[in-house]
Image (cartoon, rainbow, N blue to C red; front, side, top):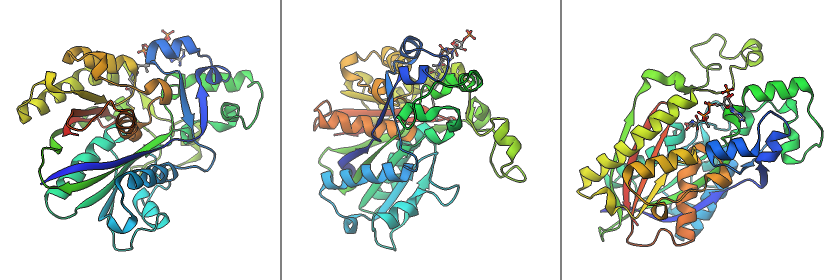
Length: 353
Ligand code: ACO
């Protein structure tokens, strides 16, 4: 028996924010953002639109594509680092709002940019253990709540139209290396137990190294602090993620190719057998660097970061969905998923479509 993806869907907020709109409120430029990251635009959620809202949009589409209703699903997994509430996670929110039966278990996982990859592994393990036959897996994030909205950010989504003050520009510029990279979005898949007809998950390799969590983390707000949030933390900007961009870049370029090679070796296939490599969309330069190291041509390594930026747990399911929809992933193809993100967590999974 194997775990097979029987349907996928995406939840993308309507507000398109091109680089030029960010350049209006901070010192940056379309040229800098495109050259360093490949991003031309991203989508921002409306005020009040959360990761569970985007996840539900994606989940409804995925279930429709799979021909499944709420009653058919045995368990739910939601991967996000930006849940609606500090606790509980988005699992129970989605379970109730989408009308799943009360007894259905809902798992909440984090793992940031590797959240969907870890979710796939969990779904596959739960299915192959025989515990559940059909799992709804959602990955998605809203990064916009991290942004300092009092500083003129409403102009990015057309809710106001004004020039920012010098002080607002200066404050926004302090976080420009991070904010230009991220967008809001979610994707979902239905994963089902099927008799082994060659399709489905073949293998995965997951890794964590927490020895340098400071490379990408949020310093403030957390239960090692008393109280867990203070005005000072907010004033000091401790609620905005810290990122050592160069270190994360370096780790991504070494760990993702390594885990792809390892999962291929464990499955008795060679890297050149991969038809489509779906890489976590954090930076186009990382995508191209990983593809180059693995000797895979651009035709086998799709990307959509130029249109969405980094949607964290949303990037892999959004990319998978788009590739299935436009025929870049076809039945029988060998698909490899790989990701690296805050934790650091990383890994790769092989899947026969
Ligand atoms: N606009 C204009 N200039 C900028 C911007 C910006 N948005 N951001 C930084 N700069 C400036 C810097 O201040 C610096 O100027 P200086 O030389 O005068 O000091 C210059 O550009 C170069 O900055 P670097 O940080 O060296 O630029 P780099 O080429 O390393 O690119 C980037 C930075 C894009 C962040 C890159 O390091 C990167 O993509 N890292 C990986 C990030 C990542 O993968 N995150 C993933 C995981 S996310 C998760 O798990 C939640």
